Image 1 (tube, rainbow, N blue to C red):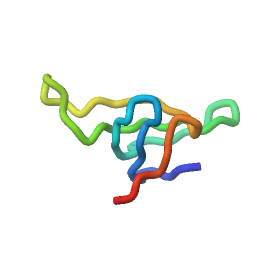
Image 2: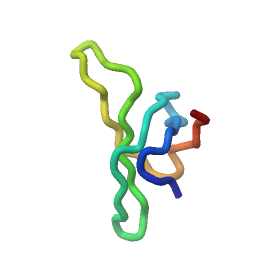
Image 3: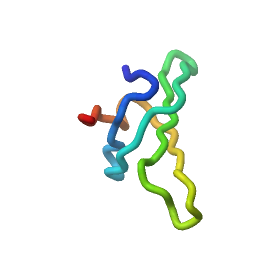
Amino acid sequence: MFEEYERVTIQSSGVVGVIVDKRIVDGQALYVVEDDRRNEDDNYPLYQCTDADLIKTEQ
């Protein structure tokens, strides 16, 4: 299980970011990860992930 503000990598895409929200739904942890890189609209994309989607990334 991960905590808010941990730096993680989304395994399927290689996106590196920070967990900005965590909640438990039906006993499963769901996380919102904010990408470290801005997109073409100058925004930081958000991704919804589970424990299985993420690996911890060193600072």
